[in-house]
Amino acid sequence: MQCQRDKKINWSAFRRTVVFIDAANIIYSLRSLGWRMDYKKLYQFFSSNSRCQDIYFYTSMRPNNQKDKKWLNLLRRIGYKTRVRQLKFIRKSDGSVEPKGNLDGYIFIDALDRLADYDTCILLSGDSDFEILVDYLHQKSKQAVVCSARTHVAWGLRRKADKYISLQYFKKFAEYKKTNSDIKSERSEFSSRPKPGETSNPE
Image (cartoon, rainbow, N blue to C red; front, side, top):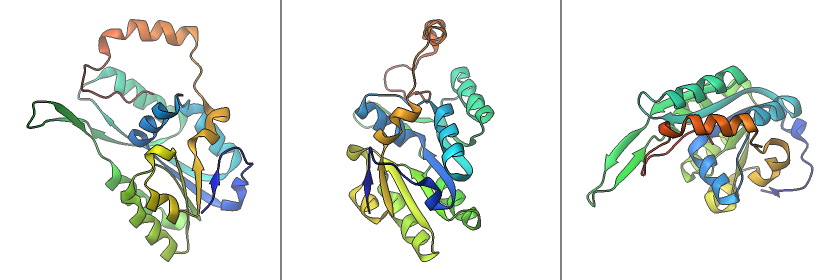
């Protein structure tokens, strides 16, 4: 296992790839790093620099939320294959509300279903549940590349991956830069922003 930050990576060495993006894990990872991802740039990066067969994006959405629907439609127009689960809000015993929208199972199914189509699985997540997936991929003579942040990646997953790449590596290629039109759009959509305790997909 190697950690790559500023070093040049030969993406063609991974041969055919399929990318799986765990949105929740990546959003929180990027918050800890202090920057936002431009997912159009990220899609273009993988499409241009690797033998990428497909890019999957897994996210939850708030019920009947137009902003989330708009976000998903944008991802689909870019070219992502989206997997969506409705976000649920679970009230805990202390009265607080916890959002739930885990899509790990969807990632497992797609990674196994597409097994014949890739040589390397590129997983943008740090969830420890994927250690089992990496073990299985190795049994099938596949490679696994894990991309996450140091504070949001399970040590076992990082250790088992054929290569670990810090999300900081992608900052120079795919950082989101806010434009004047984005600022105006955010102001007009202020009323649709999540209430305390909710989470929002667009990052």
